[in-house]
Every structure is written in C-alpha cells, then in structure tokens.
Amino acid sequence: MVIDTGSELSWLHCNKTTGFPYVFDPTRSLSYKPIPCSSSTCTNQTQDFTIPVSCDSNNLCHAILSYADSSSSEGNLASDTFHMGSSDSDISDTVFGCMDSGFSSNSDEDSKNTGLMGMNRGSLSFVSQMGFTKFSYCISGSDFSGLLLLGESNFTFVLPLNYTPLIQISTPLPYFDRVAYTVQLEGVKVSDKLLPIPKSVFEPDHTGAGQTMVDSGTQFTFLLGPVYTALRTEFLNQTTGVLTVLEDPNFVFQGAMDLCYRVPINQRVLPRLPTVSLMFEGAEMKVSDEKVLYRVPGEIRGNDSVHCLSFGNSDLLGVEAYVIGHHQQQNMWMEFDLEKSRIGLANVRCDLASRRFGVGLL
Image 1 (tube, one colour):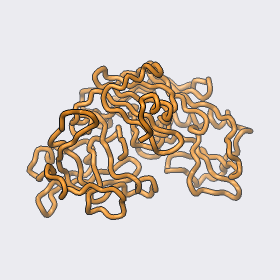
Image 2 (cartoon, rainbow, N blue to C red; image 1 turned 180 degrees about the vertical axis):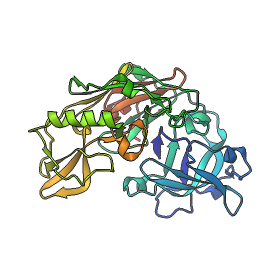
Image 3 (cartoon, helix red, strand yellow; image 1 turned 30 degrees about the vertical axis):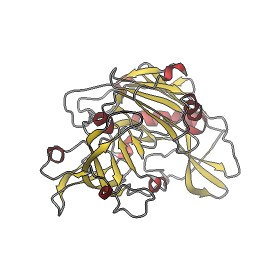
Image 4 (cartoon, rainbow, N blue to C red; image 1 turned 90 degrees about the vertical axis):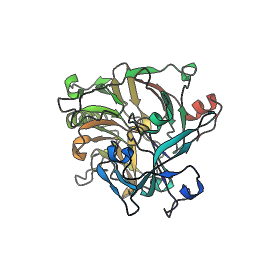
C-alpha cells in the first residue's frame, strides 16, 4: 500500500478489480459492512472527496478520490475490523474504501500497489481511527522498500532527531488544508548559499495559500514560483561547466520541472552536485547527491539520458502551497509526533535503521 500523509481515506482494491496481483475480497470477511448513503460517514464526507459522494444502484455510498498527480480511485465506502501487529485489541468498524479502480495514472509503480493508507490528521485517516499518537517511516533511496512503525519508535537511541513544530490554523481558509501535516519553511540553501528570499514569502497569506505540507504521497517537492525561480537560477549557476543543460524549451517534466540536463547514458556516476537544503523552524532537510536530480524514464536524446532537478514549480500545477514529496524524504527518518504536535527528522540509511529494529525491509 502507498503510505500517504497527504490523504485521509484509506482504500484497497476489491475483488472486482482486474489486473492487480493482490486484492481484498469482501465476501470472505464476516465483519465487512458496506456503508449506506444515509450514514453520517457518507453525508459528512472527508477532505479527500473533491467530487461529492453519491448513491450507487444498491443505495451504497460511492466515492471518487482524485490526487495531485492526476491519478484517481473510485468505489464504495465500507467498514471492517482491523488488527495491527502485536496489539491485543481489534479495532472494529474501521472505515475504508473498497475500490473498483484505483491509481488511474500512467505510472508502472502504481500497478504494483494494492491500495492506499491515508495518514493525515482527518477523522477518517488510518492514524486517527486506530488511535496512534505517533508514527515513523523511512523511505529507501535504492528501491521502493522502506520501514513503517506505528506507535512509539524510540529511534533516538540510533540518532538524535531535530524537531520542527506542526502549524495549525483553526479558522477555515479557502487554500489551507487543516488536516495536512503543515510545517514552517523558512528558507532554502544551495550548497552553503542561502537564497535571498524574504521569510514572508514562506508564510501562508490571509487565504491560507503558501502553507508547507509534508506529503509522502507526492513524488517530488514543489515550491511556489518566486522560491522555485530563485532555486533554479542558483542551481543552474552552480552547475555551469559541470552538467550540460537540456536546451529544449518544450520539455517540462511532469508539467512543473523545467531545469533538465543531458547526461551520457554510459556515465554511471553523476558529478558532484550542489546540495539543496530546506530550512524549517528547528530542523533542516538536506537533499544531496543523486536525490537532487531525477532521471526521466524513457527520455533519451542521442546518446544522453535526461535528468531533471527534483524540485518543481507549484504555480505551473495550480497548487497554492509548498509540498515536500517522498523523493526528498528518501533515507531520512521521519517521525510524526501528534501528541507533541511536531515532526522529527534525521538523515539515516533505511536498511541500517531496519536492522537496528531487528526487522527486514518491508
């Protein structure tokens, strides 16, 4: 399943879905309950429902979920009993989506997933329904494996964490997601050079636009126009003579990443690249080495592959926010402490962290 800190509702591919290796068959569960349209769960809706829920032909709650990468999922809301790890208690009537279709995007990775685990602060998220006040994860940089811990992790015995507080605004604002994990971005550095950007540019305005969300369900990190432009300009300056720029104004990767380079296909190791550091209140996220660039699959120019800066322009996507995606979180321990309203960060190799806990990579 995709662990998505930017989504509320969890869902699984149900047995009606074809083409997926692992599915959930509700007919084999004695505790499975479809949710009718009349249920308050259906009528109240969740943050995910960009399209209002509807009744299907069986008078059951039908939902369509859509995501920032243009993927989507469609099916019925239901509840079932969930059991986690070594816990002695079962959590009954846990709400999730029993989906007929999901991840309607072109990603090959999406076809390997059996569903999505919604982990934000909404009332129907997996974290909220299961009653966890803390969870942690580490996303591997070498493949799509990783480590997820629900509950207390005691990770500090391996490496101290630097914490940044979660930002909460109780007043409803049109462009502020109140159930997202929002932190305060304060600046961006390229190598050791702090970009000359006023701190006010990083703060949400009166409409809520400009919040910084930590979203493991989004692949890359997107910055609002003025910050992205400053980062692009400085990174370009610091890579002059080191990398060959892709001179193609018509090529914009994923519609928002327009600084790309040509790298010889037979060049196995990239040259030393500038480090991009995201500065938060109390913590710093360093994006270095191969994480700074992303090789675009299937994009070949002559004898060169195409690599793009792994940061995009939010303005080109029509997103009024800074979004910290999972590519930049690779090989970084991420602790979400809901009780103390903070996020802890530490650079670490995921495979070594998993051994420390005595478990293999998931």
